[in-house]
View 1 (cartoon, rainbow, N blue to C red):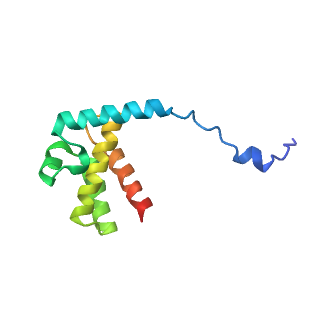
View 2: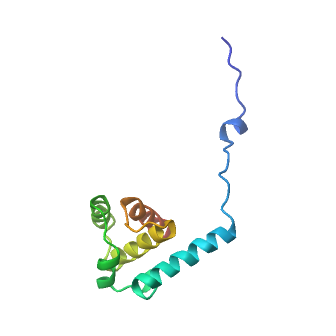
View 3: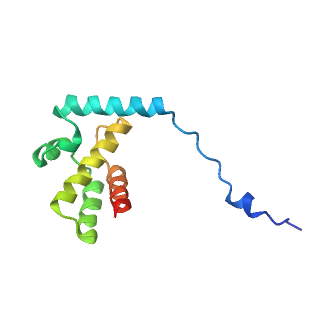
Length: 115
């Protein structure tokens, strides 16, 4: 049986997912900001460590992931808190109350992109 050769453009072409409109993104950001203000009286970015302990309780997988990242990446306490703030914000943007390991993983990826 003969199978014709595919062109490289056919192999590399990927259907792009439909882009979220700017208005929809703006609405998610506004909603997340309102949620943060209602929960803590301020945005996640300015939460103190004690407030993070209260508002950013991680599940077991999230704790393990962040602990491993602390060791492997030699993160400081400041970096640890920054990752928690970003993970909390990612969960807020998704409308999810509990910060999960997926949110921590995404926050860590953003941190690695900064480096």
